[in-house]
Image (cartoon, rainbow over all chains, first blue to last red; front, side, top):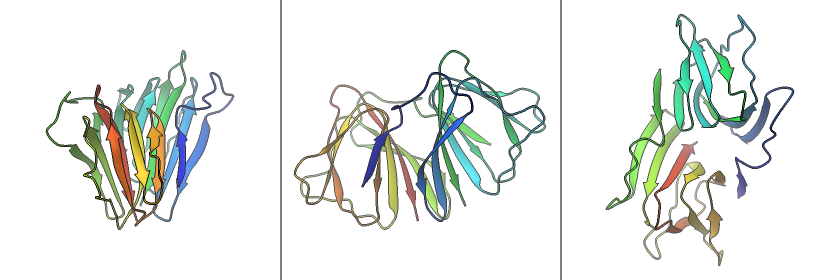
Length: 107
Length: 107
């Protein structure tokens, strides 16, 4: 039995986004991601082979999908399903508090 | 793109545990579960064909595994991995506030 707390050991400032793998199985990967103001580099897109179900647990963020003009604002509790190969980027994350994400990648 | 908020529409009191399916795919199923003081019936056990990664988001609970004497206490942010066919039960959930779980079942 593996147990822990998602809100433990959250740094206030990080040089880069921090990804902690919580589960890795043949069809599923679960990660905790901490962002402290990080965003995807301009003109870069995530284009993923697996689908993703992502939940924002703390902080706030804006997620933009290719072809959209405005980012989707995310607050604690917000979840989004992103199908495989749907291009998206993180437009912004909270500058004042850490943003905690739970990402479930699956095939 | 499917989006929503896990903390929306949470009833204070429910006659039974409420399960909302958030994602259903061939290898993964994601559910939000709301408990308002509910527990697994005495001497009943969950014995699941799929593994489960479960996260407590609000409230509190005690999870007991077969052969253990004390429940594992869960608070917001607590997560537990439960392998397939590991028998377990919910010993108790918070009586004062709703307990919100995110359950990821996978194979």
